[in-house]
Amino acid sequence: MFSPTKLKEKRESQGLSQSQLASSLGISRASYFNWESGKTKPNQNNLSKLSEIFNVDPRYFESEFEIVETYLKLTKNNQKATLHYATELLNKQNAKVVEIPERFAYKVYEKLSAGTGTAYFDDGNYDTVYFNHQFDYDFASWVFGNSMEPTYENGSVALIKQTGFDYDGAIYAIDWDGQTYIKKVYREENGLRLVSLNRNYSDKFAPYDENPRIIGKIVGNFMPLED
Image (cartoon, rainbow, N blue to C red; front, top):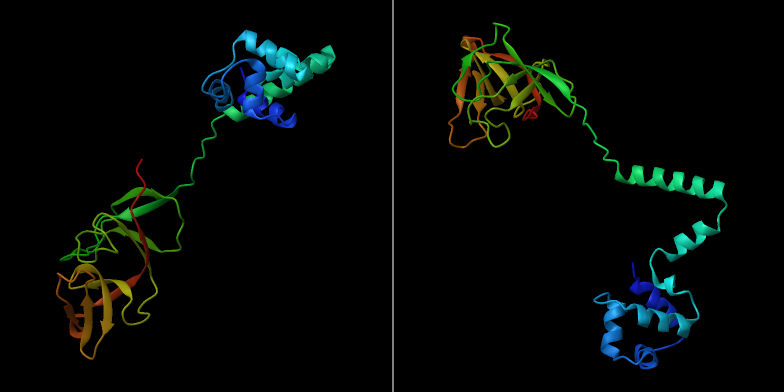
């Protein structure tokens, strides 16, 4: 294959301008320019003229010339070794490396509400889902509802650590009146104030005499990877 780059390098090494070389070849500068820009290539007659001007083999302007010339100078054994090595390089180049990301399994219990509340998960039903990061947690549960969006989306997985109450304003799973919630929790004099992140939801108040219980602190959440 004709190499415009090799032609340009050879011309410049001889200190010739495009116009000078075009004149020596008996062609227009525009025609020669098209050779170096790769738009066209010289015919066999012009290649012969170029080889005479630069005193090189007509094949010199082929992109493969140096490789072939070097290969032909090798001994038979070295030619075989070169071909073998080149084949290995080509195979490596063409090999498609498929990286399989590590996936971690999570048992996600069915019932934990971030909306109006559902029964606490006591039936042991769970789904197994996967994510590409491993968290330190005690159990996981589905998030239902949109009261804690945008941080905790409906259908995402909430990860719970059974730490008890840590500090005001953290996100907790709360068991209250037979139902469970994910809310920001504030301890007040007479009970727990449960606050949604979604401003469309009003605060809830869980009086202490109704025995609200902090199940644990939410330490992470994610949308499961698709199978």
